[in-house]
Image 1 (tube, rainbow, N blue to C red):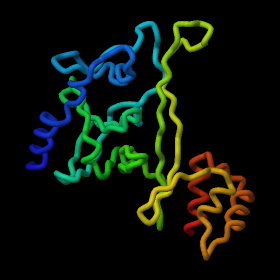
Image 2 (image 1 turned 90 degrees about the vertical axis):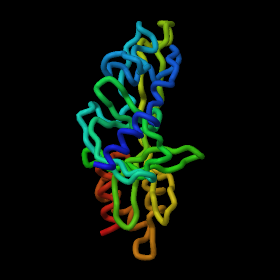
Image 3 (image 1 turned 60 degrees about the vertical axis):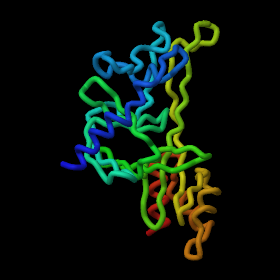
Image 4 (image 1 turned 135 degrees about the vertical axis):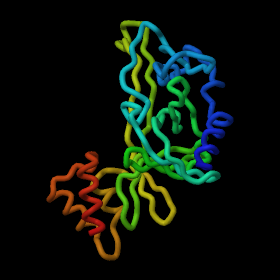
Length: 230
C-alpha cells in the first residue's frame, strides 16, 4: 500500500511530461498520443501532424493498452501497474491514468520492465538511454532494440507519400560480461561472435547451413542460440 501511494504521488508530481510538451505540426508525437481520452487540462498532443494524412503503423510496442506489468525502479523499488506501454519512438515507458492523461516515466530511474510476461531493460547507447526487449537468456543474453523512424507524408504527389508512417527496424545486441555488442546477423559474423574453446566457428556455421536457418528470422536466431548453449 505504501509503494502504491508513493507511485501515485510520483506520477502526479514528476511524470507529467506530456503536459509540458508543445504541439507543433512538425512534432511526430502528435500522432503517437491521439485518442487517449478527453482533452482536459493536460496537453496530450491530440490530433494529426497533418489532418489530410493518415498515419500507418504505431510507435508503441503493444498494439493496445490492455496491459499489466511490473516496473523496477532505482529509487522506489517495484510497482505493479496497468495500462502501460513502451513508446519506441521516444524510448519511454508510458501509462494511461484516469483514462484522460498519459504519464511518461523518467527512463533514468528504470531498471527493468515486465509487461504481459515480456521483459525489457534500459541500456545506454551512444550516451542515450534506450529500452531493449529480452529475447534470449542463458549464460549470456540477447536483446532486441527497435529503431523507429517517423516518415512524414508529402503534399507533393510526385513523392508518392500520401500518409505518415512509423517504420520499425529491429536490431539485436549481445549482452555478455556486462558489455553490450551489436550483432551482425550474417552466418559468418554470427559464428565468429559465438565461437569458443568448446565450439568452433566452422561448427556453428555448418549447423546454420545444415538447418537452413535464416538469422534474420527471430525464431531461427533463437534456434541457433539454443544450439550454442546446449
